[in-house]
Image 1: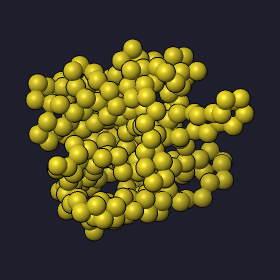
Image 2 (image 1 turned 120 degrees about the vertical axis):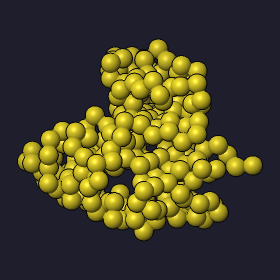
Image 3 (image 1 turned 45 degrees about the horizontal axis):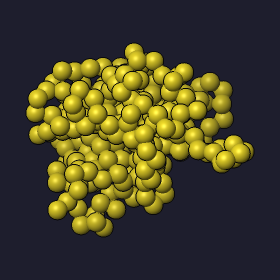
Image 4 (image 1 turned 135 degrees about the vertical axis):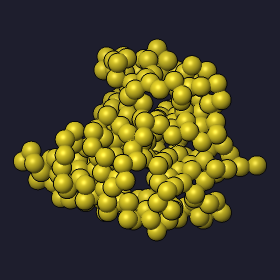
Length: 245
């Protein structure tokens, strides 16, 4: 019997449906740094392609079939129009065309996706397949929490965690998945796919997280389980509330 879902790198895969969910890309982040005067090489698009290619390869090695890819929002970074972001976007779409049909590339609208660069105006607020709903997570859509939905997949929060030794001398930050319950649904929050920064530190959630930021309130989020992204496998670290600073 196949598992309901698998953590593969920073992505989430549903074997029975062949659906791969990818978190916040923020294409153009490096370009934004350059515009701000920071010396940053443009490696993001190539890194995204290489990492996705490795993930596609792992899916194939496991004897599974990739049928559909869902990007769950914040595909681009700038809130305004940037021609470079549009080119980055096209390059990624062209790359994905070698693995899945264009109609099976689903693009969810995030709060950064103020302009549709898909060349076919296909950004959507959410995507539902059977009992699974995919959404960005910055805005609540009743359809994603309807009676038939069992699992809601989202991003937006960019979860990460800081781990330290007993003397708090060495501290390392890691991207992570969060999994828990909200409104009687199983919620899975993906880490950002952006390699440049790890993301929002959940250890400091008590002071840094405001309920308006996401559809998941703090009182619910602290009971979510943490799954840290590793090089070869992911690691379970229990509930957020046991890891708070």
